[in-house]
Length: 395
Ligand code: SAH
Image (cartoon, rainbow, N blue to C red):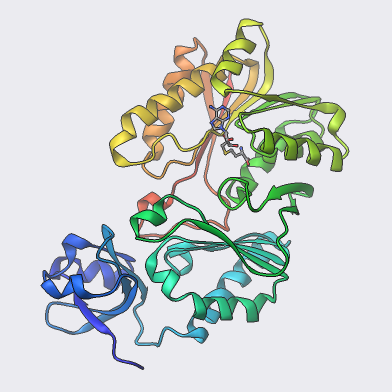
C-alpha cells in the first residue's frame, strides 16, 4: 500500500470516528500549517493525536467537512475496494426492489461519501459531490463498469454544492450514446425521466414507497398531486383506480413527461395537468370551492441551510394550510419534506399548524421516510432528510 499523507484528529472525535462517524469537520483536526498544502481530494491516513492510524479518508481543506472517511480497516482504496462496496449495495437493492430501477449508491450510507448512483436499467446516472470522490473516479468507474456493464453512463455533475468543493459544474456522457429520455419501472408503472435536463438525476426514487402508500388509498377517489414533477405519485394512483388525478407543477418539461406516462399506462383520460405556481394554483382552486379526496404536496426543499430553518418551516406551514383547504372532509392529506435541516418534529409541527390555520382538524395516520434504497447513516441525523406525514382530515 502506498504511503498516504496523514492528518490528525483531536482526541475528542477519535471515538466517534472509530464508531463510524464518516465526517471530520475542519475544527476537529489537530492544527497544522501543512494541512493547507495537501491537494484537495487527496487520500489521507487519519490518525489520533498519538499518531496511531484510525481510518483512511479523503481530505479537502476548502470544505467545512474537511475529511470524509472511506474505511476503518487497513485496506487499500483500489478497484477491488469499490467493487466490494458496489456488490454489497447491489445485492441489497436487488432484494429490496426487484427491478433494476433504484438508487444504487447513497453516498455515506453505502460507504462511498460524495457518490450518488441512480440506475435506470442499463443506463447509469452518477453525481459526484466531492473533490475526493472525483479524484478516485478512475477506480470506482472501472469497478462499476465491470459489475454492471452498463450501456450508457452520464455524469450529472451540475449541483451547486460542487462549487464549494472547488469543482466545476458539468454534464458529461462517459459511455454510450447520449439518451435524453429513459423509461423506468416503479410500482408496476412505466414512467419517463429526462437524464440530462430533469431535476437531480432525473427521477426521485426516494418517494417510491410513499407513492405506493398513497396509491393504495386512491381507488375511486379524486386526487391532486401538488409539486408533481413527472407524475411519480399521480400516475400510480390513477393506475390503482383513482377516479381523477390532477398534477400541478411549474415545470412544463416535468408535466410533459407526466402526461406521457399517463398515456403509456393507459390512464390519460383520468389524468390532467396544471402548469403554474403551486401556491397560486391552490389558492385559486380553494376560491373556486374545489375539493379532493386526497391532496398531496411534495415541495422542493424549503430549508436549504441551517440559517433558513425558520423561514423554511413557514413554507411547509403555508403549503399545508393551502393544501388542507382543498381536502374533502374525511379525505387524506400527505405532505413531504426533503429538507436535510428540518427535523421530523419541527416538520410535523409546521404541517399541523398549517392544517389548524386552515380551520381543519386532523388525525395522524402515518409518518414515513425515504425508500430503502436511500438508507440512513446511523451517525448522520441529517441523513433522515425525507419525511412524510399522512393525515386524515376529520372536519
Ligand atoms: N413529487 C415529485 C417530486 C417533486 S420535486 C415526485 O414524486 O417525483 C419538486 C417539484 O416542485 C419539482 O418538479 C419542481 O418543478 C416543482 N416546483 C418547485 N417550485 C414550484 C412552485 N412554486 N410551483 C409549482 N411547482 C414547483
